[in-house]
Length: 427
Image (cartoon, rainbow, N blue to C red; front, side, top):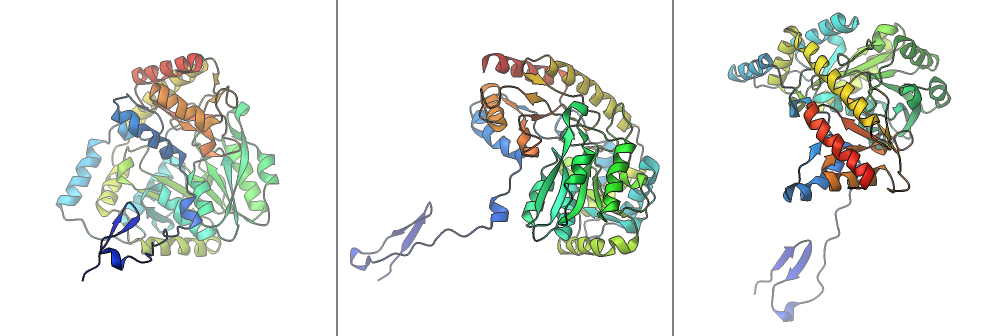
């Protein structure tokens, strides 16, 4: 006689004759590691709350993700043509794990021309977006409660991956009243024997702050005093308004700098997933670290080959479109800054780069339990989707929200009108 069991929704059901019914063992849930189960990414986590709203036909104003290609910033036609040509030419093979030489050389040329940084193709590693670069870099640096210093608030993967590799993320203050500029004394005071690197995000995500040469040099000097490398996230390097961007690797000759950059923001290649990092400093200082990252590159085989070919064409081709992007973003920045400060209960500094604005929200702790409660309440009432500031740092980000100002002004105006009505009436 055959005996059968059925598994439905995690429960095991006995399908055989009653006389064979005995003790049925139900398998326990598969254990998941803390490093996986504890991952949070506020930028996309808040989007989960839109599912039912969208199903019920509610209009969503998606101001949570910094994706220019999702709005009216389109990938330049020459890049799309280059990608299609690469595929048509059967350039669909595995490329070198460190990246195509032609692309790495184009990156070196770009860094010299745009940021006045002298590197060679051998200093560059190509990654599947800047996020993979962060993961690989911290994977090569962090273990056993090692500490990574990052600006508070910060881009969440620096916090998440530090935790993921059993490290301790430590935020140093950036001062809102001073346009979110770093508190140099606070940074210095937070260095311990466990500190392994200082992160510099310039222009900053989520605040839009741009750090000048003096500030960058002060941070590099502190790093030099403590024999620490600086991880410099520079993906918004060409998206600045009044203030000129200064690359960390341009400011120092003796402090090791690992710079992270990519093609998502300037070239509107967000979904293409391509980035790079370069190592600048004494070879003996960086050789072991670079080797540790290269080994991770080999594990994942390579970055997307046709996309690398297209990115090479992007760097070697005309760059005139960048000025137009900055011009349009500046108009939207100006509108957002003015409009948000007109709303009672909201105040914000003016971003100097990138395409984010980070206003302070009054009433949190009274009208709303915390900034996440505010964000979810706003979404459900109005369809306006923004990100809770505590998702960018529990200390210096709380009671704020990050808003993307990428949409056309007409769309931003509707979203901000809805936000104003919510602040007045709670709906």
